[in-house]
Image (cartoon, rainbow, N blue to C red; front, side):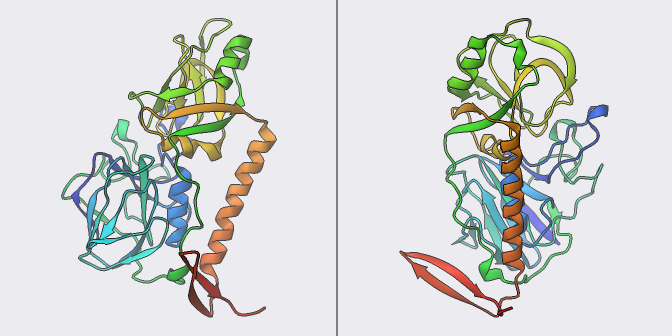
Length: 337
């Protein structure tokens, strides 16, 4: 019993935080492109941060619940409805067996995430439920979803504690023009000063030849001081390669394990989700920062997750709906300590 796929959308797959420790044998980590949205969806329904979810690209699926459960949608707003009733983004929502969830086209951004309470019952392969699409490995039968599939629930819950307060605080809007922060290196010394200035002071456009493996960018040529090729070495998520063309390539979730192009910088982990929501034609700029700031931002994000979990898991004595300036909020009252 789980989610029956009536129509799948162009690219809907099971993803989690990815599988690690296997790049040495050529296996990409895969995982959700927008890890932040994936984790927030899991928080809303009471799952572990890294539980498997459905990642939907550009256009969502039409799904039928075959068993009662609670779900949440995050990431790109895709105008979802449950039995014709609009479903808010960033809020836990109950569904009854037989209910139909229709998820439409992305209004801003390009990737949405659907988490269900208790997670999805798909095989754990090399420590992950993620689908590595290029290799036909993991997830649901190693592929994107198709009409007629049924994705089983692992441990469905018709009710979860504090459902009324399980909603996200206001999130920054998804933009078609972003600035992402980077740590320069490890081969930034292979570029001229003019090349580095071009990289850090120009606007690049996302090319249509971009996918879960990498985002190709178009813009001014980033000039090398020597040859663009290096002895192949490891590639991390968010690495920015500059091949001989001088046009950046951002390594994304299904990136290869190693490569022989110079890497001018690496996007910091908290900003990679911004790139994941970019569609062809969107604009990207780069800003260099120091490693200690990148670490502080990472720790602040993890602390945010913990604060949200504490709020959602509190033992509230009662909850109230409060309207302020036309916005409705759910306020929980917990016992005094």
